[in-house]
Amino acid sequence: MAFGVFIHRPDSVYNDSLLERYEFRRPYLGRVKACSQDWIIYYEPTKVMETRGYFAVAKVERVIPDPDSPGLYVARIEPGSYLPFPNPVPFNGPEGIVEQGLLGAGGKISGRRQWAVRPISAMDFRRIIELGLAENTTLLHRIDTSLRMELSEDQTPFQCEQDRIRTDFLGSRALRDRVFRQLVLRAYESRCAITGLKLINGGGRAEVEAAHIRPVEANGPDIVNNGIALSGTAHWMFDRGLIGIADDLQILVSRHVNDPGAISAMINRTGRILAPKRESERPHPDFLEWHRQNCFKA
Image (tube, rainbow, N blue to C red; front, side, top):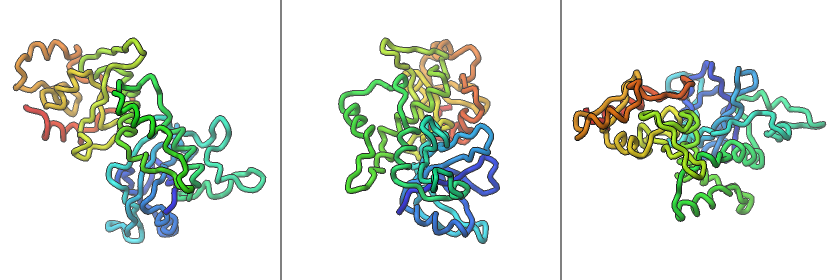
């Protein structure tokens, strides 16, 4: 097993679905197989316009021949392991190149930088993960003592145990909830998408919550397109199917609510959710449909 870097371009000709599969050619088979049952970092090369650099982490479950494309192979991503970075890491950081294993003799960048799949040292892996998952404390949610202790342990994950990195940290529910909250609150500017309210408590923390559209328990991923920022009351109603969202982002109110007038009064004037400015961060129609089919009480 080994850590790796998988290069991905938004305009890739390969049939990639970064939450599920990474397609590649035979010359990379050995390198990809070396990453089986271990973690990799996704990277957008500097030639990509507005590149995110190192932008997510995922775990390779297994490697198989592509059943749909002879001559190609697929790295299957372990379900639920994909985790985007709240803070994408540029190739060149304040202290120079973050992936220092690419530096050869004389401090020059080696040709490995061009490899679509390449190994990465534990030290470089740790450095990039720590930068990508660094916490914005202004978006911290209120937590009880037991969860605070769990987070405290998880936030110092990379203590070497006989030269082994604690990668189990990356599957921690506490970490993934924190990262998901950062992604969603940043996209929605800490504003409830239903009511339009933006409330900050005395400690400078946003009172709004990050809700999964398709729940984790139903295989919903921890990505911003599966999230929506909601106040506590709106979150409760959304989870119980009293509020839904149409594909055009119109807010739907169930016929089963006992006080429809009060619900209508709390919805913002547009009648639609106040969606993120970036199209790429808005709720995906597949997740909205899942919620309407499985949660919303029409």
